[in-house]
Structures are given as structure tokens and as C-alpha cells.
Image (cartoon, rainbow, N blue to C red):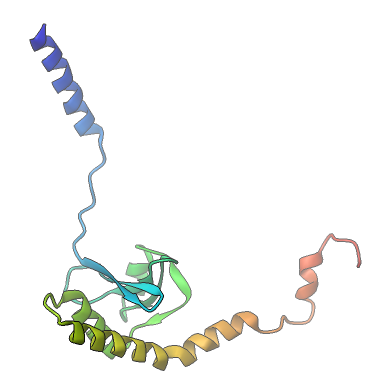
Length: 152
């Protein structure tokens, strides 16, 4: 009786194992670091030792990506509408933050400070992107919202 139960349970386990989907192995590396009130995540998707993209953990949208990798990273996660390529400095600093294992607290703070500085340098482009969203609509566009509504 016990042998029959073991055989049935074993066969079910074998069938369940065959039916399960293969687990996707992550090649690269991911870390999320605290920056003031935000958690910034840095990811090397390909495992080549360089950061491929950065995103804020709360929005899960890529806002900086490595030059030339836009299409590849967009398959992994949504791009923020104002996403832009990383500068060489941002790539260098974020890669150090991701891969250097024994950073002192002071070194980590310096790297984070440099990343904030890089972000502030890109702020003009980011502000331009946001300004495009708040620009006044073209004549007639605002009226489209009220199509089918009675006149006020």
C-alpha cells in the first residue's frame, strides 16, 4: 500500500515538474539605493559589468538608460515619457555603485552625490519634457474634451 502511494505521489510530482514554466535566469545585477525620499534602482540587464538602466522603485518606469540600449531595456520595463540616455559620468558612477562591493560609507555618499549632480545637470532637459505636457493646447484641442456634451 505504501509503495503504491509513493509511486502515485512521485508520478504526480514528475508531471507537475514537467508542466511548470522554465524560470528565467537573471544574467545581470540589480540594486536599489535610497536617495532622500526615493529608492533608485540600478540594473545591469546583460551582465556585461555596465549599468543598462535606472528607475525609481515607486514608479517602475525607466528614466535613464545606457546609450544604444533603449529598445532592449524597453522590453524589460516601461520607459518614462521623459526617459533619456545616461551621460558617461552617470554610467560610470552608477556602475561603481552597483558593482563595488566594499565601498566605505564616505565613498558611497560621494558616488550618490555625484549621481545627484548628474541628475541636476540633466534637469533642463527633464524640465523641457515636462513643460511640453503643460503647454497650452492648440486652438480647438480643448474643445475635443467636451465632444458630445451639452454647451455650458
